[in-house]
Every structure is written in C-alpha cells, then in structure tokens.
Image (cartoon, rainbow, N blue to C red; front, side, top):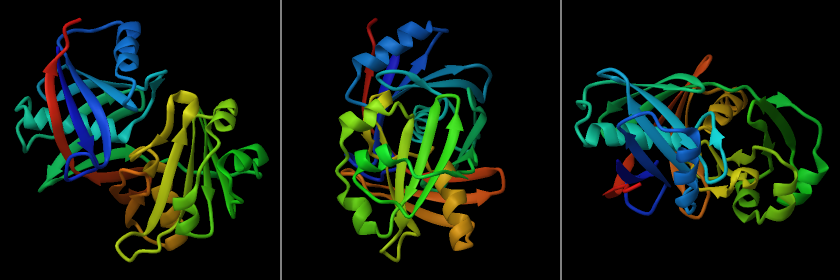
Length: 267
C-alpha cells in the first residue's frame, strides 16, 4: 500500500498541518486502520482513501486514538495526492464519500478548494473548568454538539491572548471534549481572524492547522464581520493560512499542500 506525507495548508515544507495519506487497494478493517494511525502517532491525522469509481472515493480519517467524522487538512492532503500521482487529472473534481456526507475538492490555480458543511455555533454558558484549563477569560462561549463530542468556541479580546495561551493539557483532557477553538479578530490586515485548536481527549494536544474548525469559524466570524469571504490564520507553532467562503449551509475551504515523502507500507 502506498503512503504519502503531506503538509496541508502550506506552500512550503514543514509548515501547515502534516497528514499521512494511505491509498488503499481494498477495504480494510477499522481496527487495522486505527493501528496504522496509532503507529504513526506523531501526526494528528491519517487518511485512508479507497477508489470507488473513476472520480469517486471513500475517505476516512483517524487520529492516534480514534476515528473522526470530519477533517479538513487530511481531505486537502488526500485530494492533493490524487492529482499529483495522476490518479485523477488536474481538471477533475474529487468526490469523497465520508461519515460527514459527500465532500468535493477541485483545483483553482495553485489552490485547492473544498466544499464542507457549515457548522453553526450555539450560545453556551461559561464553562469554568474549560476556562481554567485554557487559562483565559473568554468574552464569548459557544458550543456545537457533535456525535464525536462537544466542540467549544471561545472568543477572547485580542490576538495577543490567542498567541500566548499555554493550556493545562492534563486538565483539558479530563474534560472529555472533542475539541476547543480559541479565536479573536486578527491584529494583522492580511487576515480577518486568528485561532488555535486543542483536542487532547482525541490525542491531539494542539492541532497545527485545522480545516474543519473553519466550518465553525467562518459562519461565526462571517456573522460578526458581515463578510462572506475571509482569511483565517491559525497561530500554532507551524502556522497556517485558510481561505474561507461562507455560502449558507456550506463553507468553501481553500489551501495549498506540499508532499514531503512517499513510501510503501509493508503490513
């Protein structure tokens, strides 16, 4: 089985969010895919792609600990490999069948555009233990309840606060949330908002660049800023840039990707 390392939401190596893409030649058991993702436990996501028809593929995503229902950067990485390896022609649209429904991706110049479902954050009461774990006092607390667990969005007063966060990961992991986004309006003219994403309960202390988080962030900031097209900056150590276009119940996520290695899995 062929495997590929890809830095997603990046235009140079060792930036953005790394993912492993595995091109399957047959259906594999869930336990086998989870074992592979756990073996490669320095990466937040491993994607498994299986061809169904000429332009349609099944796609599943696994963290080192669990399968997830939606992952933006590993979807971008998977589409990038299908084009780069000439499994699909550059002009072809990719159609992925996933646990979140049909996801599509297409090339637009050097950018990859992916159509994802928009997720609307609902107002929530202050979660004091979460605030303590992150070490902040948010000006807004929102929540989205998903089958994988609750996802929180915490807005803070400034980009400086976002950048300086040093969570207590042991405490954060004990809260058994799927993840938490901390965000603010950007302090740089090139970006509309910035964010960071933490999910230690599923094996990811801090995700370098989280495409799926922008399914929540784009409608949230689109409403606040009265904008439909925005640029998000994820302020992790590796950093990443995500283009967002909010279109009602859909969000178009835009990014670039770089292949860092190719190999063969022998098991």
